[in-house]
Image 1 (cartoon, rainbow, N blue to C red):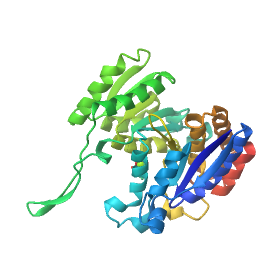
Image 2: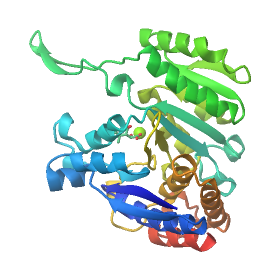
Image 3: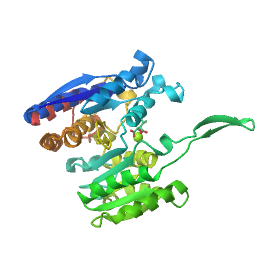
Image 4: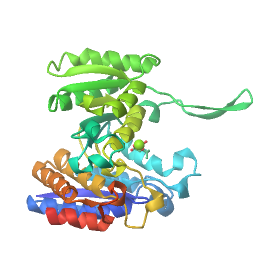
Length: 356
Ligand code: IPM
Ligand code: MG
Protein backbone atom coordinates (compact mmCIF):
# COMPACT_ATOMS: atom_id res chain seq x y z
CA UNK A 1 0.00 0.00 0.00
CA UNK A 2 1.26 3.48 -0.90
CA UNK A 3 0.01 6.87 0.34
CA UNK A 4 0.95 10.36 -0.76
CA UNK A 5 1.49 12.97 1.92
CA UNK A 6 2.20 16.61 1.16
CA UNK A 7 4.37 18.21 3.84
CA UNK A 8 4.25 21.99 4.22
CA UNK A 9 6.78 22.93 6.90
CA UNK A 10 6.01 26.66 6.73
CA UNK A 11 7.79 29.11 9.01
CA UNK A 12 9.58 29.40 12.36
CA UNK A 13 9.74 26.10 14.21
CA UNK A 14 7.56 24.54 11.47
CA UNK A 15 10.57 23.06 9.68
CA UNK A 16 12.06 21.63 12.90
CA UNK A 17 8.87 19.98 14.13
CA UNK A 18 7.88 18.39 10.83
CA UNK A 19 11.26 16.67 10.40
CA UNK A 20 10.91 14.24 13.33
CA UNK A 21 7.22 13.87 12.50
CA UNK A 22 8.07 12.72 8.97
CA UNK A 23 10.48 10.11 10.38
CA UNK A 24 7.83 8.90 12.82
CA UNK A 25 5.28 8.74 9.98
CA UNK A 26 7.64 6.70 7.87
CA UNK A 27 8.42 4.14 10.57
CA UNK A 28 4.80 3.82 11.77
CA UNK A 29 3.58 3.32 8.20
CA UNK A 30 6.19 0.66 7.33
CA UNK A 31 5.24 -1.29 10.44
CA UNK A 32 1.74 -1.59 9.00
CA UNK A 33 2.93 -2.44 5.50
CA UNK A 34 2.42 1.01 4.05
CA UNK A 35 4.86 3.22 2.19
CA UNK A 36 4.44 6.98 2.47
CA UNK A 37 5.58 9.08 -0.45
CA UNK A 38 6.41 12.53 0.89
CA UNK A 39 6.30 15.63 -1.29
CA UNK A 40 7.25 19.01 0.15
CA UNK A 41 5.65 22.34 -0.73
CA UNK A 42 5.60 26.00 0.19
CA UNK A 43 3.09 27.88 2.31
CA UNK A 44 3.20 30.99 4.50
CA UNK A 45 6.16 33.33 4.83
CA UNK A 46 8.64 31.05 3.06
CA UNK A 47 6.22 30.90 0.13
CA UNK A 48 5.96 34.72 0.10
CA UNK A 49 9.76 34.97 0.03
CA UNK A 50 10.14 32.46 -2.79
CA UNK A 51 7.08 33.09 -4.95
CA UNK A 52 5.44 36.30 -3.73
CA UNK A 53 2.29 34.46 -2.63
CA UNK A 54 1.49 32.85 0.77
CA UNK A 55 -0.34 30.06 -1.08
CA UNK A 56 1.16 29.37 -4.52
CA UNK A 57 -1.29 27.69 -6.94
CA UNK A 58 1.13 24.75 -7.14
CA UNK A 59 0.76 24.11 -3.40
CA UNK A 60 -3.04 23.95 -3.55
CA UNK A 61 -2.79 21.65 -6.57
CA UNK A 62 -0.37 19.31 -4.76
CA UNK A 63 -2.62 19.35 -1.66
CA UNK A 64 -5.70 18.38 -3.66
CA UNK A 65 -3.83 15.48 -5.21
CA UNK A 66 -2.45 14.14 -1.90
CA UNK A 67 -4.01 11.65 0.53
CA UNK A 68 -3.23 14.01 3.40
CA UNK A 69 -1.36 17.21 4.21
CA UNK A 70 0.96 17.77 7.17
CA UNK A 71 1.63 21.41 8.04
CA UNK A 72 4.13 22.93 10.48
CA UNK A 73 3.00 26.51 11.02
CA UNK A 74 2.83 29.88 9.29
CA UNK A 75 3.74 33.45 10.20
CA UNK A 76 6.44 35.46 11.91
CA UNK A 77 7.60 39.00 12.63
CA UNK A 78 9.37 39.25 9.27
CA UNK A 79 6.00 39.40 7.50
CA UNK A 80 3.98 41.25 10.16
CA UNK A 81 3.84 44.54 8.27
CA UNK A 82 2.40 43.10 5.07
CA UNK A 83 -1.19 44.00 4.15
CA UNK A 84 -3.81 41.50 5.38
CA UNK A 85 -4.38 39.89 1.98
CA UNK A 86 -0.73 38.90 1.54
CA UNK A 87 0.19 37.79 5.06
CA UNK A 88 1.49 34.24 5.72
CA UNK A 89 -1.74 33.42 7.62
CA UNK A 90 -3.64 33.85 4.35
CA UNK A 91 -1.79 30.77 3.10
CA UNK A 92 -3.26 28.60 5.83
CA UNK A 93 -6.71 30.18 5.56
CA UNK A 94 -6.62 29.70 1.78
CA UNK A 95 -5.73 26.02 2.21
CA UNK A 96 -8.60 25.50 4.66
CA UNK A 97 -11.01 27.20 2.28
CA UNK A 98 -9.60 25.71 -0.91
CA UNK A 99 -9.78 22.17 0.48
CA UNK A 100 -13.20 22.70 2.12
CA UNK A 101 -11.79 21.80 5.56
CA UNK A 102 -14.83 22.86 7.58
CA UNK A 103 -14.32 20.59 10.60
CA UNK A 104 -11.34 21.18 12.86
CA UNK A 105 -10.80 18.58 15.58
CA UNK A 106 -8.65 19.67 18.50
CA UNK A 107 -8.43 17.03 21.21
CA UNK A 108 -7.03 18.16 24.56
CA UNK A 109 -5.76 15.09 26.35
CA UNK A 110 -3.71 15.25 29.48
CA UNK A 111 -1.12 12.57 29.60
CA UNK A 112 -0.90 11.64 33.32
CA UNK A 113 2.87 12.28 33.69
CA UNK A 114 2.29 15.87 32.55
CA UNK A 115 -0.31 16.74 35.22
CA UNK A 116 2.21 18.91 37.04
CA UNK A 117 3.07 20.84 33.83
CA UNK A 118 -0.47 22.25 33.69
CA UNK A 119 -1.07 25.69 35.14
CA UNK A 120 -4.11 24.21 36.95
CA UNK A 121 -4.05 22.02 40.04
CA UNK A 122 -3.29 18.41 39.05
CA UNK A 123 -6.62 17.01 40.34
CA UNK A 124 -8.56 19.44 38.10
CA UNK A 125 -6.84 18.17 34.97
CA UNK A 126 -5.79 14.56 35.72
CA UNK A 127 -7.15 12.32 32.94
CA UNK A 128 -8.58 15.28 31.07
CA UNK A 129 -9.96 14.19 27.69
CA UNK A 130 -11.96 16.77 25.80
CA UNK A 131 -12.48 17.35 22.12
CA UNK A 132 -13.03 20.81 20.67
CA UNK A 133 -14.67 20.86 17.27
CA UNK A 134 -14.16 24.20 15.61
CA UNK A 135 -15.98 25.31 12.45
CA UNK A 136 -13.13 26.26 10.13
CA UNK A 137 -14.28 27.71 6.82
CA UNK A 138 -16.95 30.20 7.86
CA UNK A 139 -17.87 32.76 10.49
CA UNK A 140 -16.03 36.00 11.07
CA UNK A 141 -12.80 34.68 9.53
CA UNK A 142 -14.33 34.64 6.06
CA UNK A 143 -17.50 36.79 6.36
CA UNK A 144 -18.15 39.70 3.98
CA UNK A 145 -18.24 42.64 4.07
CA UNK A 146 -14.89 43.20 5.73
CA UNK A 147 -12.34 45.95 5.57
CA UNK A 148 -11.10 49.28 6.82
CA UNK A 149 -12.61 52.42 5.30
CA UNK A 150 -13.05 56.09 6.05
CA UNK A 151 -16.44 57.20 7.31
CA UNK A 152 -17.12 60.73 8.57
CA UNK A 153 -13.43 61.59 8.56
CA UNK A 154 -12.24 58.66 10.59
CA UNK A 155 -11.20 55.15 9.73
CA UNK A 156 -13.57 52.30 10.59
CA UNK A 157 -12.65 48.63 10.66
CA UNK A 158 -15.32 45.96 10.25
CA UNK A 159 -15.83 42.22 9.87
CA UNK A 160 -18.94 40.10 9.55
CA UNK A 161 -19.81 37.02 11.56
CA UNK A 162 -22.09 35.05 9.28
CA UNK A 163 -23.30 31.44 9.30
CA UNK A 164 -25.87 29.84 7.07
CA UNK A 165 -28.04 26.95 8.21
CA UNK A 166 -26.18 24.33 6.16
CA UNK A 167 -22.82 25.39 7.61
CA UNK A 168 -24.15 25.13 11.15
CA UNK A 169 -25.88 21.84 10.53
CA UNK A 170 -22.86 20.07 9.00
CA UNK A 171 -20.48 21.04 11.83
CA UNK A 172 -23.10 20.23 14.46
CA UNK A 173 -23.55 16.77 12.94
CA UNK A 174 -19.79 16.18 13.24
CA UNK A 175 -20.17 17.16 16.89
CA UNK A 176 -23.07 14.79 17.55
CA UNK A 177 -21.43 11.93 15.71
CA UNK A 178 -18.09 12.21 17.50
CA UNK A 179 -19.84 12.69 20.86
CA UNK A 180 -21.84 9.52 20.28
CA UNK A 181 -18.54 7.61 19.91
CA UNK A 182 -17.16 9.14 23.14
CA UNK A 183 -18.89 10.03 26.40
CA UNK A 184 -22.05 11.18 24.63
CA UNK A 185 -22.09 14.75 25.85
CA UNK A 186 -22.05 17.64 23.40
CA UNK A 187 -21.78 21.27 24.49
CA UNK A 188 -22.50 23.85 21.80
CA UNK A 189 -20.81 27.18 22.54
CA UNK A 190 -22.26 30.46 21.23
CA UNK A 191 -23.13 34.00 22.23
CA UNK A 192 -26.88 33.72 21.67
CA UNK A 193 -27.66 36.32 24.34
CA UNK A 194 -26.16 39.02 22.13
CA UNK A 195 -25.63 37.82 18.52
CA UNK A 196 -28.34 36.90 15.99
CA UNK A 197 -25.86 34.63 14.21
CA UNK A 198 -25.58 32.70 17.48
CA UNK A 199 -29.38 32.54 17.89
CA UNK A 200 -29.59 30.81 14.53
CA UNK A 201 -26.65 28.58 15.48
CA UNK A 202 -28.49 27.44 18.61
CA UNK A 203 -31.79 26.89 16.76
CA UNK A 204 -30.15 24.76 14.09
CA UNK A 205 -28.18 22.70 16.63
CA UNK A 206 -31.41 22.08 18.60
CA UNK A 207 -33.32 21.17 15.43
CA UNK A 208 -31.09 18.16 14.67
CA UNK A 209 -30.58 16.97 18.25
CA UNK A 210 -33.51 14.56 17.84
CA UNK A 211 -31.45 12.57 15.31
CA UNK A 212 -28.97 11.71 18.08
CA UNK A 213 -31.08 10.54 21.04
CA UNK A 214 -28.07 8.98 22.78
CA UNK A 215 -26.20 12.31 22.96
CA UNK A 216 -26.94 14.75 25.76
CA UNK A 217 -26.85 18.28 24.28
CA UNK A 218 -26.16 21.44 26.28
CA UNK A 219 -25.51 25.07 25.30
CA UNK A 220 -23.11 27.54 26.86
CA UNK A 221 -22.23 31.16 26.21
CA UNK A 222 -18.64 31.55 25.13
CA UNK A 223 -17.58 33.74 28.05
CA UNK A 224 -18.90 31.17 30.51
CA UNK A 225 -17.27 28.36 28.50
CA UNK A 226 -13.88 30.08 28.78
CA UNK A 227 -14.38 30.35 32.52
CA UNK A 228 -15.62 26.76 32.92
CA UNK A 229 -12.62 25.47 30.96
CA UNK A 230 -10.28 26.83 33.61
CA UNK A 231 -12.63 26.22 36.56
CA UNK A 232 -13.70 22.62 35.96
CA UNK A 233 -12.55 21.40 32.54
CA UNK A 234 -13.52 17.77 33.12
CA UNK A 235 -17.23 18.66 32.88
CA UNK A 236 -16.77 18.74 29.08
CA UNK A 237 -16.70 15.86 26.64
CA UNK A 238 -17.15 17.38 23.16
CA UNK A 239 -17.46 21.10 22.47
CA UNK A 240 -18.71 22.34 19.10
CA UNK A 241 -18.36 26.00 18.22
CA UNK A 242 -17.68 28.66 15.62
CA UNK A 243 -14.41 29.50 13.91
CA UNK A 244 -13.29 32.35 16.17
CA UNK A 245 -14.66 31.01 19.46
CA UNK A 246 -12.95 27.70 18.67
CA UNK A 247 -9.66 29.44 17.92
CA UNK A 248 -9.69 31.04 21.35
CA UNK A 249 -11.09 28.16 23.40
CA UNK A 250 -8.68 25.66 21.87
CA UNK A 251 -5.69 27.69 23.04
CA UNK A 252 -7.20 27.73 26.54
CA UNK A 253 -7.78 23.99 26.40
CA UNK A 254 -4.23 23.46 25.17
CA UNK A 255 -2.75 25.10 28.23
CA UNK A 256 -4.75 22.75 30.48
CA UNK A 257 -2.62 19.96 29.08
CA UNK A 258 0.59 21.64 30.12
CA UNK A 259 1.73 23.20 26.89
CA UNK A 260 0.53 24.37 23.51
CA UNK A 261 3.35 22.13 22.32
CA UNK A 262 1.29 19.01 23.04
CA UNK A 263 -1.87 19.68 21.04
CA UNK A 264 -2.47 18.08 17.63
CA UNK A 265 -5.28 18.89 15.23
CA UNK A 266 -7.07 17.50 12.21
CA UNK A 267 -8.98 19.56 9.68
CA UNK A 268 -11.46 17.54 7.66
CA UNK A 269 -13.64 18.08 4.61
CA UNK A 270 -16.93 16.40 3.68
CA UNK A 271 -14.79 14.24 1.41
CA UNK A 272 -11.24 14.47 0.15
CA UNK A 273 -7.94 15.37 1.66
CA UNK A 274 -7.45 16.19 5.37
CA UNK A 275 -4.90 18.59 6.84
CA UNK A 276 -2.98 17.89 10.05
CA UNK A 277 -1.13 20.49 12.06
CA UNK A 278 0.00 21.26 15.58
CA UNK A 279 -2.19 23.88 17.30
CA UNK A 280 0.86 25.88 18.38
CA UNK A 281 2.21 28.64 16.17
CA UNK A 282 5.64 29.18 14.67
CA UNK A 283 7.34 30.39 17.89
CA UNK A 284 9.88 32.59 16.05
CA UNK A 285 11.70 33.30 19.34
CA UNK A 286 12.85 29.68 19.66
CA UNK A 287 13.13 28.78 15.97
CA UNK A 288 16.35 27.16 14.81
CA UNK A 289 17.50 26.25 18.33
CA UNK A 290 16.37 22.62 18.37
CA UNK A 291 14.36 23.18 21.56
CA UNK A 292 10.80 23.12 20.16
CA UNK A 293 8.40 20.36 21.19
CA UNK A 294 7.68 18.09 18.20
CA UNK A 295 5.01 16.03 20.01
CA UNK A 296 1.99 18.04 18.80
CA UNK A 297 3.13 17.46 15.21
CA UNK A 298 3.90 13.79 15.88
CA UNK A 299 0.45 13.35 17.46
CA UNK A 300 -1.03 15.13 14.41
CA UNK A 301 0.57 12.42 12.27
CA UNK A 302 -1.27 9.93 14.52
CA UNK A 303 -4.53 11.70 13.70
CA UNK A 304 -3.61 11.53 10.01
CA UNK A 305 -3.30 7.74 10.19
CA UNK A 306 -6.67 7.58 11.94
CA UNK A 307 -8.76 10.00 9.86
CA UNK A 308 -7.16 10.15 6.39
CA UNK A 309 -4.93 7.13 5.80
CA UNK A 310 -7.21 4.65 7.50
CA UNK A 311 -4.42 2.83 9.37
CA UNK A 312 -5.67 3.06 12.96
CA UNK A 313 -3.01 0.63 14.21
CA UNK A 314 -0.27 3.12 13.26
CA UNK A 315 -2.19 5.88 15.07
CA UNK A 316 -2.42 3.77 18.23
CA UNK A 317 1.27 2.89 18.03
CA UNK A 318 2.26 6.54 17.80
CA UNK A 319 0.02 7.55 20.72
CA UNK A 320 1.51 4.72 22.77
CA UNK A 321 5.11 5.57 21.90
CA UNK A 322 4.57 9.21 22.89
CA UNK A 323 2.97 8.16 26.17
CA UNK A 324 5.95 5.88 26.92
CA UNK A 325 8.52 8.58 26.26
CA UNK A 326 6.65 10.93 28.60
CA UNK A 327 6.22 8.24 31.25
CA UNK A 328 9.98 7.67 31.17
CA UNK A 329 10.46 11.32 32.08
CA UNK A 330 11.77 12.84 28.86
CA UNK A 331 10.66 16.44 28.40
CA UNK A 332 11.24 19.28 25.98
CA UNK A 333 11.80 22.62 27.72
CA UNK A 334 8.14 23.73 27.45
CA UNK A 335 6.88 20.79 29.54
CA UNK A 336 9.86 20.32 31.83
CA UNK A 337 9.77 20.68 35.59
CA UNK A 338 12.87 21.61 37.60
CA UNK A 339 14.00 17.98 38.02
CA UNK A 340 13.24 16.73 34.50
CA UNK A 341 15.52 15.44 31.79
CA UNK A 342 15.33 18.13 29.11
CA UNK A 343 15.84 16.94 25.53
CA UNK A 344 15.81 18.82 22.23
CA UNK A 345 13.39 18.56 19.35
CA UNK A 346 15.41 16.07 17.32
CA UNK A 347 16.16 13.83 20.30
CA UNK A 348 12.50 13.79 21.30
CA UNK A 349 11.67 12.55 17.80
CA UNK A 350 14.34 9.84 18.01
CA UNK A 351 13.02 8.69 21.39
CA UNK A 352 9.53 8.27 19.95
CA UNK A 353 10.94 6.26 17.05
CA UNK A 354 12.87 3.98 19.42
CA UNK A 355 9.65 3.25 21.34
CA UNK A 356 7.87 2.49 18.07
C1 IPM B 1 -4.92 28.45 14.59
C2 IPM B 1 -4.16 29.71 14.30
C3 IPM B 1 -4.67 30.29 12.97
C4 IPM B 1 -6.13 30.63 13.16
C5 IPM B 1 -3.88 31.48 12.43
C6 IPM B 1 -2.42 31.18 12.26
C7 IPM B 1 -4.46 32.00 11.14
O1 IPM B 1 -4.28 30.59 15.36
O2 IPM B 1 -4.90 27.53 13.73
O3 IPM B 1 -5.53 28.36 15.66
O4 IPM B 1 -6.48 31.69 13.69
O5 IPM B 1 -6.97 29.80 12.79
MG1 MG C 1 -5.22 29.76 17.08
